[in-house]
Each structure stands twice: as structure tokens, then as C-alpha cells.
Length: 274
Image (tube, rainbow, N blue to C red; front, side, top):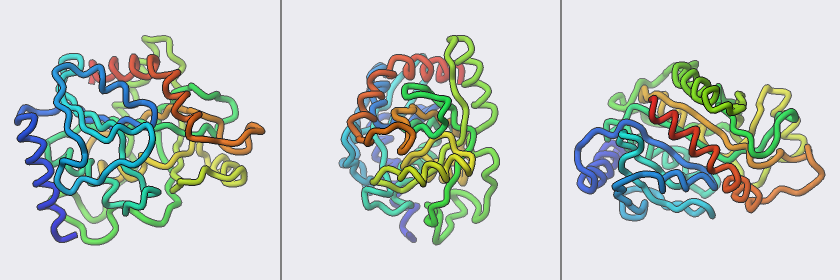
């Protein structure tokens, strides 16, 4: 941990050497089945995670495992095509390392996306959900251990983890597109097993509308550093126990492909007005 700042700066320097010093206005983390948005970026510079110093490697099907930096609607953006998860065997601090690198690159705005299981029985697979808050009952925390004041304070507020102004922007864009953008609470489970039907019932009782295996650690790290974060879930399947059928990752990827046009149109319009 004592070398974290050095590792962050080495990774940031490597990326800057590839893309230059022009400011990057928005960073995006693209979840399972949603990585095609990066194909919309013009004049892209593509950097494989394996080439970036201290970067972990993505092992999940549907995650390309690379950064794409370039122009999207006259804004300079950075996209992560694939992220890192606790269930891959990475510690929480490793999971959020890329988010901390983004901050060292001077990025202040973050869009987190994911594929999630739908807990709200009034919704359906293919819906998009604006994340208004999250629930983390997982004991581990990405900031456990030594705190680096250069990144953020030891204790910090999480009441605006999903920036209220950015949520209003997303609502406005969805209304312009006549898109029924759902809003709700995302609950973190560690995976890689999907949740049990009883765990889904518990999540519903706690107030969750969707469940998943990502996003929350990244939102915590971003809040620590004062980044403005927007979160959007693609609800790829009904969570366990709601329908009488087993869950599988192929369904997650397939639904992601089905909604990619709706998702891409929404995100592009948000980025344009960011």
C-alpha cells in the first residue's frame, strides 16, 4: 500500500505518453455486454490493460480488457471496456485502482454502467435504471487500510455518491428521448454465484431494485476523491426466484446486445450535455 501513489502515477504517466496531456472530460466504465459504446469513439487510442503498469487483467467473458480514449460528441472521453471484480480474486483496492488512476489523470467526471439482476417485480429485462443510491453489506471496503490524503480524507460523506445534478441531467435526457428510465437502488453482492431467491427477497426488503457484482467499490473510491459519478444499470435478467428458470451469464450478455442501441443513444446524449 505504501507504494500506491507511485503505482498510480506510473500508470497515469504511461497513459499520458500514449494519448497526450489534453484534458479528458468524462471517464466511462462499461459493464458486461455494454462495451460496444467504445466503438462510437472517433480517433481512438486503444491501450490493453496488460500493458499499463500495475493494472490488473480482466478475466470476464464480454469484457474486452482495454482502455479506449478519444472523441465522443466533441468531448474527450476515456472508456474502460471491461472492469475488475472482487470475485475474480482481486482485493477491493485493486478493483478500484483504475478509478484512482483516472483521478491522477485529472478526470473529474465518471459514468459507471453495469449489467444487473432486476429485483423490482414491476420492471422487466431490458429496462435501464438510473442508480440513485446503493447498499453494501459486504464487509470489505476498497479504502480499508492506509489512507492517502493526496487522494481523499480518511472519513468522507457518501450521501451524494451518485451526483444529484447528474441524475437530473440523465432524467432530462431520458424524457427528451421518451425513454422510460427507471430509478432505483443497487445492492452489491460479491459473486461469482448469482444470488439465491431468499437473498433476492432480502434485497427487496432492504429497498434494493437491482443486484449486481460491481460498481459500488468504484463509486466509493470516486466519492473519496471528490469525483462526480453517474450510474446506470442495464437490467439483463429478473433476479433469482422471480421467474421459474435458472440464471446464466449468456443471458446477461444477450440482453446487453439487445438494448445496446437504447443504451448507447442515452449515454451519448448525456455525454453531449455533461
